[in-house]
Image (cartoon, rainbow, N blue to C red):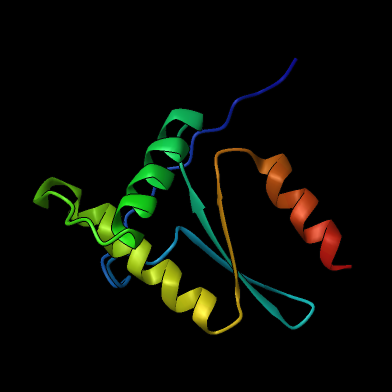
Length: 98
Protein backbone atom coordinates (compact mmCIF):
# COMPACT_ATOMS: atom_id res chain seq x y z
CA UNK A 1 0.00 0.00 0.00
CA UNK A 2 1.38 3.39 -1.01
CA UNK A 3 0.78 6.20 1.44
CA UNK A 4 0.27 9.74 0.22
CA UNK A 5 1.72 12.42 2.44
CA UNK A 6 0.51 15.96 2.69
CA UNK A 7 2.83 18.61 4.07
CA UNK A 8 1.63 22.04 5.02
CA UNK A 9 3.64 24.85 6.51
CA UNK A 10 3.63 28.55 7.10
CA UNK A 11 6.85 30.42 7.69
CA UNK A 12 6.26 34.04 8.54
CA UNK A 13 10.00 34.78 8.65
CA UNK A 14 10.63 33.43 5.17
CA UNK A 15 11.43 35.92 2.40
CA UNK A 16 8.68 36.25 -0.20
CA UNK A 17 9.42 34.03 -3.16
CA UNK A 18 11.88 31.79 -1.32
CA UNK A 19 11.55 28.14 -2.39
CA UNK A 20 9.75 25.72 -0.07
CA UNK A 21 12.80 23.62 0.78
CA UNK A 22 16.44 24.64 1.13
CA UNK A 23 19.05 21.94 1.64
CA UNK A 24 22.79 21.56 1.58
CA UNK A 25 24.37 18.38 0.23
CA UNK A 26 28.04 17.70 -0.53
CA UNK A 27 28.89 21.40 -0.44
CA UNK A 28 26.03 22.25 -2.79
CA UNK A 29 22.97 24.39 -2.02
CA UNK A 30 19.78 22.93 -3.44
CA UNK A 31 16.62 25.04 -3.49
CA UNK A 32 13.39 23.16 -4.13
CA UNK A 33 10.07 24.71 -5.12
CA UNK A 34 7.29 22.14 -4.63
CA UNK A 35 4.05 22.31 -6.56
CA UNK A 36 0.87 20.27 -6.07
CA UNK A 37 0.80 18.60 -9.48
CA UNK A 38 2.15 18.69 -13.03
CA UNK A 39 -0.48 21.26 -14.04
CA UNK A 40 0.87 23.75 -11.49
CA UNK A 41 4.44 23.08 -12.60
CA UNK A 42 3.51 23.77 -16.23
CA UNK A 43 1.60 26.94 -15.27
CA UNK A 44 4.65 28.19 -13.36
CA UNK A 45 6.97 27.47 -16.30
CA UNK A 46 4.65 29.34 -18.71
CA UNK A 47 4.59 32.34 -16.37
CA UNK A 48 8.39 32.25 -16.12
CA UNK A 49 8.69 32.20 -19.90
CA UNK A 50 6.27 35.13 -20.23
CA UNK A 51 8.26 37.09 -17.62
CA UNK A 52 11.59 36.34 -19.33
CA UNK A 53 10.11 37.48 -22.64
CA UNK A 54 9.50 40.87 -21.05
CA UNK A 55 5.77 40.52 -20.65
CA UNK A 56 4.18 42.21 -17.66
CA UNK A 57 2.35 39.67 -15.50
CA UNK A 58 -1.02 40.51 -13.93
CA UNK A 59 -0.97 41.51 -10.25
CA UNK A 60 -2.80 38.29 -9.40
CA UNK A 61 0.48 36.45 -10.12
CA UNK A 62 2.51 38.40 -7.56
CA UNK A 63 3.45 35.26 -5.60
CA UNK A 64 4.69 33.46 -8.71
CA UNK A 65 6.58 36.56 -9.85
CA UNK A 66 8.39 36.70 -6.50
CA UNK A 67 9.28 33.01 -6.90
CA UNK A 68 10.61 33.58 -10.42
CA UNK A 69 12.79 36.49 -9.29
CA UNK A 70 14.10 34.42 -6.39
CA UNK A 71 14.89 31.54 -8.78
CA UNK A 72 16.92 33.93 -10.95
CA UNK A 73 18.97 35.02 -7.94
CA UNK A 74 19.61 31.39 -7.02
CA UNK A 75 20.80 30.48 -10.50
CA UNK A 76 22.97 33.64 -10.74
CA UNK A 77 24.87 32.36 -7.70
CA UNK A 78 25.50 28.94 -9.29
CA UNK A 79 23.22 27.16 -6.85
CA UNK A 80 20.77 24.46 -7.82
CA UNK A 81 17.03 25.06 -8.27
CA UNK A 82 14.48 22.29 -8.67
CA UNK A 83 10.84 22.88 -9.57
CA UNK A 84 8.93 19.68 -8.92
CA UNK A 85 5.87 17.90 -7.69
CA UNK A 86 7.55 14.48 -7.41
CA UNK A 87 10.01 13.26 -4.81
CA UNK A 88 11.64 10.97 -7.41
CA UNK A 89 12.89 14.01 -9.36
CA UNK A 90 14.66 15.32 -6.28
CA UNK A 91 16.17 11.92 -5.50
CA UNK A 92 17.42 11.54 -9.10
CA UNK A 93 18.95 15.02 -9.02
CA UNK A 94 20.72 14.42 -5.71
CA UNK A 95 21.98 11.01 -6.89
CA UNK A 96 23.53 12.84 -9.86
CA UNK A 97 25.60 14.99 -7.46
CA UNK A 98 27.31 11.96 -5.90
